[in-house]
Image 1 (cartoon, rainbow over the protein chains, first blue to last red):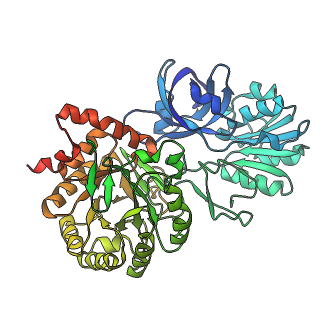
Image 2: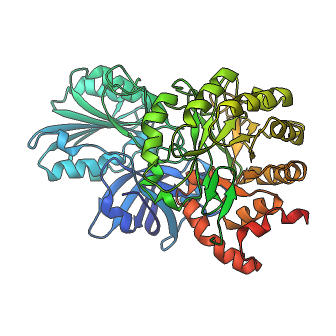
Image 3: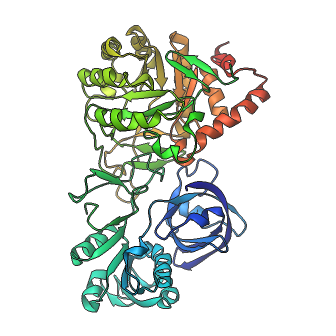
Amino acid sequence: MIQQERMIVVRQSEIAQHIFELTLQGQIVQDMNPGQFVHIRVSDSFEPLLRRPISISNIDKETGEATVIYRAEGRGTQILSQKQVGDEVDVLGPLGNGFPVEATPEGGTALLVGGGIGVPPLYELSQQLNARGIRTIHVFGFSTKDVCFYDDQFSTLGDTHYVTVDGTKGTKGFVTDLLEELKPEFDVFYACGPLPMLRALENFYPDKTGFLSFEERMGCGIGACFACICKTTDQTDKDYVKVCSDGPVFPKGVVEL
Amino acid sequence: MSRLSIQLPGLDLKNPIMPASGCFGFGKEFSNLYDLSKLGAIMIKATTVETRLGNPTPRVAETAAGMLNAIGLQNPGLEMVMKNELPYLERFDVPIIANVAGTTTEDYVEVAEKISEAPNVKALELNISCPNVKHGGITFGTDAVVAKELVEAVKKVSKVPVYVKLSPNVTDIVGIAKAVEAGGADGITMINTLVGMRLDERTGKPVIANGTGGLSGPAVKPVAIRMVYEVYKNVNIPIIGMGGVTNAQDVIDFMSAGASAVAVGTANFVDPFVCPNIIEALPARLEELGVQRIKEIIGRSHL
C-alpha cells in the first residue's frame, strides 16, 4: 500500500563522485519490493516544489531500513544530500511495480545489466535472486571509474564485470560490447539504465525473457498527472503506459524504444 | 447544515474542497489512498469526443514554486469515460464535475450532452482555457463573443448546470466572465494555468517538448486571487476559485476574494493527501478567525 511517512535518516555518505547512499528508517519499508521507488520531498518549502523519484537499492525489513543511492546533480538531490542523521524526510512510497524475481526458475541464472545510476535497484534484486538459489551475473556500465560504486557488494553476490566509456575501469565501451565478449549463459535478464542501453539490450537478446526498468520525468508518481507516459509496441492492447504506476519495470517488448 | 457545507447550482457540497481537473485523473489512483467521499466534489480530467494521446514528453518542468505542464488533454475519450471512469466513481458519495473539452463547438456540445446524463455528474466545467492544444481550447476562452456563443450552445443540451473555466491568459478577464454569464453560464471556475516557458540551461532550448506549458502551483496564487477578486465584483454567478492552493489559509483567501468553493490542483502531485488534510484543518482555522460557517467569509474582502 502507498503511504506517506516522515522517515528518519539513519546514515548518509558520498560513496562515489556526487553519488550518495542514504538509509532511511520507517514503516513503509515493510511493503517494499526490488525495483520499486520512493518519491521524496526534499524540502518542506515550495522550493523545489515536486518530489524526487529515487529507486530503492536495499530493503531490510528486520531493522525497518531502506537504502537509496542517487546522484546529487540537480537542485533537489543536492538538498537531499545535505540531510543529517536524525533528520526527517517526507517519503511517499513504495511506488510502482518492481522486478519479478520469480520469473527466473530456481537454480537458474539471471543476468543483471545496469548503466550508471540505473545500477542501484539491481542490488536488492540480486540479493533476493541469490536468496532463491539463483546465480547472478552482473554487467555494469559507467561513464568513468570515479562514479562506480558497490564493487564489493556485487562481487560477493556473483560474477561482476565493468565497462566504462573512457576505459578507466574494466573494458572500454558500452555494456553490449562487453556482453559480446563475455557471451554469458543465462535464463532471464533484468536491466536498468539509460534508454540507449535498454534499446541496445532488447536488440541484443531478441529471444530472451527480459525485464527493463525505465526512467522518465515524473510529476505525481502515482499515475494521476500523465507526465511520464511511454508509447507501447503492438505487443500490448494499451496505447500507452505510465512509467510511475504501470512500471517502472516492464517486460521486454512492451515499451516502444 | 454542517459548518463547511456550501450550496451551488447543481452542487450540494459537504465542504468547499475539490481536486481540480487534470490533477486527479479520474480519481482511481487517489481512491487507493483515501475515501473519496470526504471530498466536496471531484473535477475529473478533461474529456473529449475521441481518445486523445496527448503531447510528446517531456510534458512537465519544475519552476520556482511551481511547475509547467503540457499534457495535451490526454484522455480515453467520451465513450470510455462514460463506460469505465464515471461508473467507478459512483461507489463514492461525491458529486462529479465533468470537464468538457474539444476543438469545435460541435465537439463540446456532443460531450456535454452525453456526459451530463451520467447519474453522478452534477455539473459541467467547460474547458475553454487549455493552453496546451493547438486547436480549440483556449481559442474559445480568449474571445468574449466566441465564448458566449459556446456557452449558449452547450446550455441548450446540458442536463446539469454549466460552469465555465476561464483562462488567465487574457487582457480583460472581467469581459470574458461577463460574456459567459450573459451566455447563461451557471458559474465560473478560475483560473486555468498561465502560459509559460522554461529553457534548458545548457542548450537554451525549451525543456517541455511542446515548447510552452501551463504554469501552476503556489507561484500563480496572487494572480488567481486578483482575478477572482475582480470577477466577483462584476458578475452575479458563483465562482469556484483555484490557483496554487496548498493549505487551509489559501482556501480562506480565495473565499474572501469571492470564491464560493475552492479547487486544489498541483498540490495533489506533491502531497496526494492534501485535499483531506485541508478539509480536516479548516474548522480549526475558522475557529481562530471567529467564523461560524465557512460561507460567511465568501467575498469578505469586498465589505
